Image 1 (cartoon, rainbow, N blue to C red):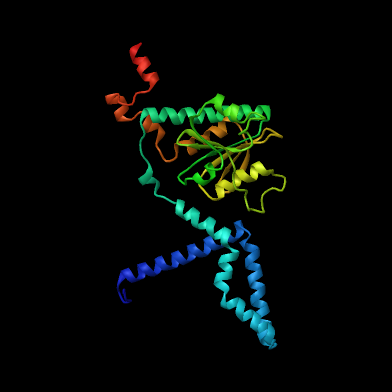
Image 2: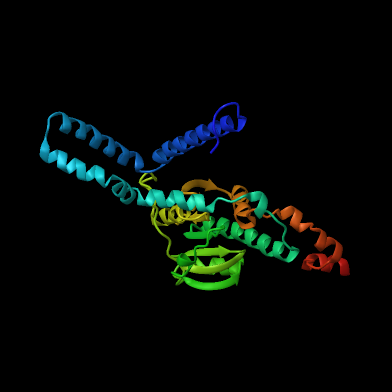
Length: 289
């Protein structure tokens, strides 16, 4: 155990202790503001005030009830806050050191991801123009296999034609979501969990609430096209933003598709340029010409 005195390490750990406590308190307040936990906290405070007056006036029956409540307080809090606590723990579990996960990809892999990103933007723009409802989930580091299992696994290349046909009205898969994994259409017709956030705009329909819901339990990015207005929206980390166009949507899609990979360095990687191991079709064609 580190003791006090002139030991500088002791003071360093004291400062660290204070910083950690302050950070936890800050996150707790932030957590309460962003969820329905704020209302639950108010309820708990009311119980404390009630307990004070019950003890002051010696109300034995109420004292017994309050004793039972406070003796099992931790269990009650876990049950009441279960959705919020789960969301917080899931977000903590998704945390990672980007500097360690960042890497390079081959030119062929780059072409797949680039083609997928471009197709997604083009198709969403067209769906918005024709006011065709659609919802596309770009999977992040958190695997959502249990959600993909609710639909039809395709494991197909991303293409304008395939995406358009999936979301065509009366298509058997058009009501569900498409899940993009590693630049490919992993599954279609998937059922997404609805958001439990009661602060969302009451005018949002089921499609938009589902788009937000899946981002509350994963680090996925969801694109949703309204069939009523044609407006393109993007959901990330439980937050829905609306009014995207082709330019702004492309920025979001590229971040989600490429993730932490340095796409530009990968495109011009040493292996690809020097040894020609992963040269793209275009590069090979240019060389032959």
